[in-house]
Image 1 (cartoon, rainbow, N blue to C red):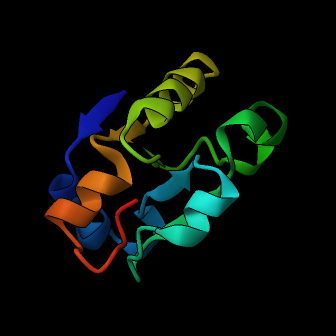
Image 2 (cartoon, rainbow, N blue to C red; image 1 turned 90 degrees about the horizontal axis):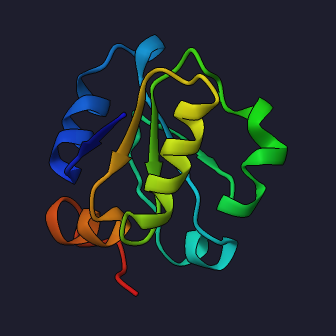
Length: 112
């Protein structure tokens, strides 16, 4: 499991071939996801709140690179560890979460 800053995640998504692009797994609550989300045309985004991850694990493809995202990086780090414990190989935590994404990559994403 890796932790990457927002700029590195952006480069990873944009430089990956379409069939190898990471999945952005947003583990925030629905109201948070509606308020602010990472928007990258080249990325597949999957929104599963943290509490639903165990029951919806089958929706997360273990063959893909998974980038876990939350507000500040704490919940997503827990989910990343959970996925690794379940056998997922290529898991990344977005350091600083959507808040850091807004500050460092895309200031149009609202901060809350």
